Length: 253
Ligand SMILES: CC(C)(COP(=O)(O)OP(=O)(O)OC[C@H]1O[C@@H](n2cnc3c(N)ncnc32)[C@H](O)[C@@H]1OP(=O)(O)O)[C@@H](O)C(=O)NCCC(=O)NCCS
Image (cartoon, rainbow, N blue to C red; front, side, top):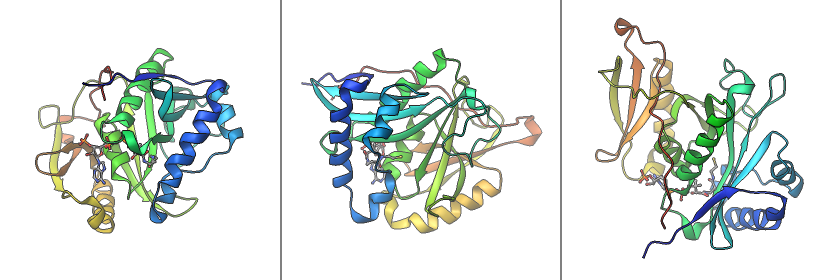
């Protein structure tokens, strides 16, 4: 029988559970996956749990915290995470996703996507218009989850701080238009295979090339193991791609 999981905002009482989950997830990463997430100190989490423009969401199986994410609402004029991306969006309109972690025992049922869906609905109530995230290129579980939430790949680059290959994804939270030929976009699919890891270096180069040509990674075609790329068809007067918003769901595990 499916289990019901509870998703809710975390507070300072959850600090030890948050630290424990971070340790479990980071200890479980392979050597070549350690760059997927920054190890955060208790002090870092306290800021998020005490709501200094940063918040935390958690997923519980009974009393057990099994997934968590930090999200930030930067203020105008304030330094923010990922300053090299979405520079045209005022801070006050942004929600920035960070430190998404799912307990290994609970992976495979889309909890990251569910958390992003939930945060997105909350963020809209606070007038946020755009969500952003930066994800390591060799972490397809994470960027597929973000794409399942409707985020689109807008930039493919090296992280300016550690030079890692990274993807930058963004979502317009108030648009219901899906890029397609009907909505004025040219599009094509790019085969990524069922074992993405094998092709990471080549994929990164290809993705950089498509972004340089004005394309955005707008979706996943599971049947053909492909990513869908689209760009505004100038003859149709479109200026930028937008994505459908995805409604939150009850989570069954
Ligand atoms: C990234 C993470 C949060 C995702 O956990 P999750 O929500 O359980 O993700 P899932 O296992 O349900 O996978 C999500 C999607 O990625 C796909 N995916 C998972 N592993 C994959 C892989 N190795 N290659 C390609 N696709 C993969 C899944 O098929 C799924 O897509 P689908 O629903 O369309 O089939 C989790 O793997 C994690 O905690 N990793 C370690 C910490 C981390 O990397 N955090 C992200 C920092 S940005």
